[in-house]
Image 1 (cartoon, rainbow, N blue to C red):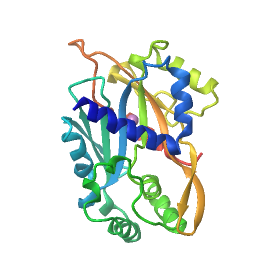
Image 2: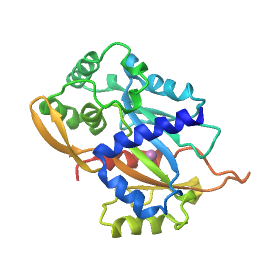
Image 3: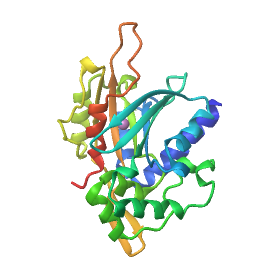
Image 4: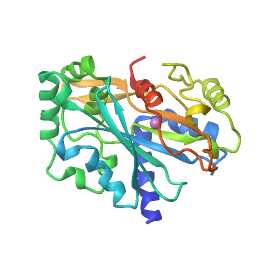
Length: 265
Ligand code: NI
């Protein structure tokens, strides 16, 4: 089973690098080779039955992952859950879904038409978590989505792929504090997400996170190719609970700001 999981994440990672070349460079910058362990991988989807959070999660449940927490993001109209494997060196997976019914009829109609273009059973295919977008969308419709939800627009352009990978600072050999990681990333020439400060969370919530701003990558829209924000890289430092185990959950207030790493600069 572990080999299957490792192979799944390798495919997801390669698919992510295709549109996030900076991640490969940051990965090399921080790691000495074998010490880059992923804290988590994050996904976005729509809450439409054929592609909702549960559909994505099924791929992980099949591999022995368990549901471990749920989160609400009222302002962004999102609902999320996270999944963990008993082997704590395997990445946690954070899956959110957009509550499509909370948006204007125009946005709902664009989203519905995207999902209708998908082949039946597409979400059950083995490669679904690294399959990208299954539809054609115009830049005009992308901009309409963007006006109401950056999340919806991102998903319409990039589809089903990792939104970000996250380096576990706890496992890095050369770094023990998030500020040192942030400095190294900035010195390497990469921009950090500064919404709410570079570091989201602190020891009191047992989790500190920071992230790069997403790369810009070309997307083929039905009316031409445009460069838009793709994916980003995140860094997480976890603190131990009273029982000595590292906190393994997520902090909604911090995640809320991390979502903005795909905003246009
Ligand atoms: Ni994250």
